[in-house]
Image 1 (cartoon, rainbow, N blue to C red):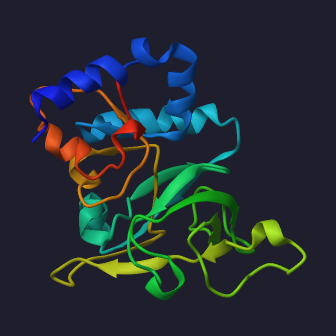
Image 2 (image 1 turned 180 degrees about the vertical axis):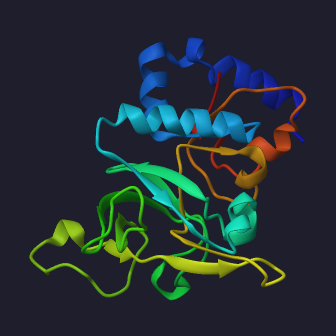
Length: 220
């Protein structure tokens, strides 16, 4: 657990007052925000999404049977029934797509484009694919060699996952906004840097144990 000495160090060196307002603002632009509830995660991700100033699009998953739309995304590898994204938004992959090429659960990325097929209605029908930039990707390139900046850009097509009973399925894109996540989902992830609001009721060990070094932590 976090010791008294570590707590005092956090309060002395990792707060906005200690590091300066401008430095803290810059840090928040890059850091993951750990939240105590899903509602806080959604609210923070929504604010970050609208602040990008780029086109926002909606993805509505296909559920079979239709009642599966009420089932939690936890049963479908993180695919939400309805998701909102934007060009240049930070995302993470929610399941292992191809370990060999670095497309693993939790891999960070950035949305670069979204394409709907001919005759499909944007924001209503599922896109044909979403183009994401994944720095850890090491597989074949999808764009011309002369476009070196697109070396790690890859098109992701819709995926279908079943729940544990195989009685329901959901088809969509296994990606999620990565500006914020709950403390629970952050367990097991290697996140750096992070910022968070310390709430005494939440065990600090869950907030900090997966992040190295401690210099990459800020508290508000």
